[in-house]
Image 1 (tube, rainbow, N blue to C red):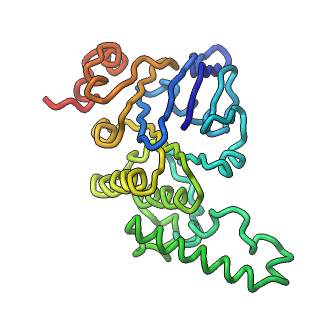
Image 2 (image 1 turned 120 degrees about the vertical axis):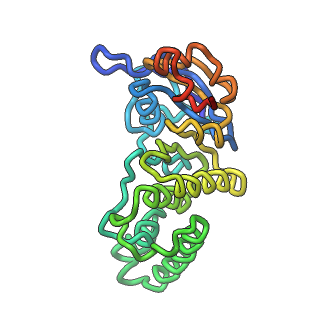
Amino acid sequence: MIKIEHVSKAFGGIQAVDDVSFEVAEGSITGLIGPNGAGKSTLFNIVAGLIRPDSGRISLEGRDITGRRPHQLFHQGLVRTFQIPHEFSRMTVRENLMVVPAGQAGENLFKAWFRWGQVREQDSKVLERVDEVLDFLEISHVADELAGNLSGGQKKLLDLGRTMMTDARAVLLDEPGAGVNRTLLGKISEAIQRLNTERGYTFCLIEHDMDLISKLCDPVHVMANGALIASGPMSEIRQNEQVREAYLGGGASGRMGEQR
């Protein structure tokens, strides 16, 4: 679904992404891991249209999307979340979900004044969808809570909910497990799996929690110093000496989630 071909990006004298190529297959949950500073988030930002690459090509379902802006990619079904959720903190959870769908009639002043029936009908459909998303993610109990008051894990679930309010086909998840307690991490993991298996979402996710990567992802790609150094199932990645060297110089069994 997403094809990354020979993508490179430098900032001054620092090569943040160095000739990276891999694919995110349709229907997969693909992992992207690596030590801090490996270039993972920069690559995500390139795919998501926040940064233009110096060279290389990004395609989505065979269409070249290199350099497309985030709002253009949104309409093509590619969305991303961030390590630090970007919720509207002074709006409720329900309102955060309601504002996501594009092209709502109520956003047009003429229609808001003179076609209120159309606006009301569309709002009703959006609310139905919101309720379905809240139920799916099991966060109906915080629907009327200000989003800024949510816990870190609840905000990550809200981020997932916002992707569900779009016509997303591919979702880039940036550290969905960061700062989340184990109970909510389990809910997030379950929601990702269900969206993948029941609704056909394709995911590519950056994550430092190797247990979460092992549970969700196949294949897994590993970056270090801007370059792609390994790809494959997590069982192989754990045994890869180059990967072990990238994580703490070979003493990385604990960091890589290996059982002792």
